[in-house]
Image (cartoon, rainbow, N blue to C red; front, side, top):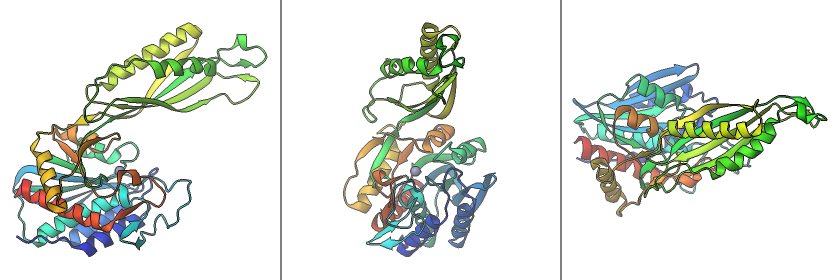
Length: 385
Ligand SMILES: [Zn+2]
């Protein structure tokens, strides 16, 4: 069977997707999702638009097979804002120059989504009949809150699946682990007073100044992961006080934790709470703390011996004429919801440099987009042939 990826399709579709401003927040993925669903249908694929909220939608594409054991390729449709730094190119122009496509989302990760679609289209054109479905799971809301992936789990949209491949940018290397993401907002509630009489108040900023070093030094239990290294904790936002002569009754921090397999987020939360309360007791009996979770994605690791991993490695090697690197990533993807949600192993492998994500003048190499599509098509034939 001769499966030929259509280079023009990969380029044009990437450009079309980049031109939609699906910036998250707020997301507004519906127009790009509708366009993508139409493009899939025009290519002879099944497409289902999955509305989520006002202006927001997932798309599920499918090349249908007869049995269960589906291969899911997944990518997200939202992008981060262009950012404060100056761009040399129009962030939403999708300019094609020097063999690259420029624009916000070209690399992270509308290029990957276009490659997924081009792979399915090439297989269909070649007359490939998959044993089980090849599913293209295109999500809204990945960059904040995982709205789309969460809805796919809730609605059991990927029931019957066996394998998950995330098309996030890896330079076509093969990543089989991702750190967990655990964001906690911690609020200290004291009592306000005139700045000239601090003994009448409970200073929430003073409390927080004592808590932060304790937090940074706290011996959270963990085991080093060969793939992902060590967990991290970083206090990245602090807000408190608003006037020089007023004792602040409120101070808030946001703590960004990246976890490794074996760490339980609920256990982390309990430890955070008891440390915060212990420091509060030592500071002032009236000081109260409140904790709130802003993001909670568990760490993930796929066994190297899992057949999916070997299949992806072989597909990459076949297309690129060289073995890929197998490693882990320090960030979280939709797989954090989808893999445990459907009890399936995941691998991350996609076009574009991981370091290019969220950067000014973001771009992706066209050659890599085409190779990614060839890899996905090859993989589908291995797993669904
Ligand atoms: Zn991404």
